[in-house]
Length: 205
Length: 205
DNA sequence: TGCATATTTTCACCTCCTGCAAATTTTCTA
DNA sequence: TAGAAAATTTGCAGGAGGTGAAAATATGCA
Image (cartoon, rainbow over all chains, first blue to last red):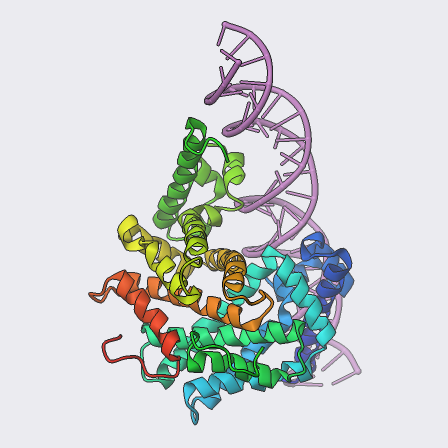
């Protein structure tokens, strides 16, 4: 944990990013991650295959590196927010607070989204990461609501929040309808606030 | 599609079941699916390794065979129900209609649940299957609500329903609190009907 | 029964991923 | 700054997963 910004840590971060970029580049080029081997990705990034697997457990994980990073931030932010906010608000604002629209290249995100959508392996990897996120966040949510992580309610609430976040992000990315991402997320969460059986509000898509 | 009940089809179903059972048995025995090889499962079921992969793409898929079957039934049932029911009700009643509590051995389900919970590979496999289920059901939901499957709302509603189904099933299985499964599912769905920010009703867990 | 069809098996092959130890690089310290 | 100490990268070997193709076997039907 020390050395947060030492040269060593920065080089490692750079290598990770290079591997992730290489995976994305090659996958787009060849029309699917399954058409790319781990060897090719490593070569493209200028490291050995073994090094790729030192950083990532699989080529799919390499491609999803940014998401991994986002979940880390989400968890950290959430942990702070629940100290002075109702959990649901904390979840929504933490989702908005990621500022995906401002911090990432949308073209690149859309590429990745397309690749994921087409690849069973990537879908599984992403889903797996979401489950990890769910587990970690569940402890936070349960504690913040004074319930147990064994209870049904915190699971449903957290699940709804992650669902809203993922769904609205993807939808906004592929169907940008003049709204900002923050607005889209807010609307997505609102659906669960007023009850899913309530018809969507007039201004919503 | 012909020969629905021919000897051939029944033998294939039996082999599939045998493989699935073998996978479960061995995984429980060795304390995790990762401790079991595809070869062992095939041997236990009395077929060649290649045959295992003719039936299932992976040993994880073999272990989750029952769930695969359940999703097929859910889709079929849902397709019928939306013809004469509001979508949300159709989703809830289709979930209840699976009658998991009556048709499966609970001990066995709990074993599987435990194995899944412990294994990243199984979590991914199950999540992947859920995404397939989501895709197929989405077309049904979108059409039934007169919306497009590109729209945000049907995705959120369906997602909420699947989340409620999965979460309540798991919770009921591991924390049977005197309620029937149908009651538990109904309560899970109710959370999304009244809005997740509403406190759980007095009688709920 | 004997032919047509479907299933199972064998086999070769590629890729993924991990452990381990050697080699290399970076950092620290005297 | 030289050299020790620590961390990173690499090569290598090997187990396991998974697929294509063709041979072998089993099944269904006229």
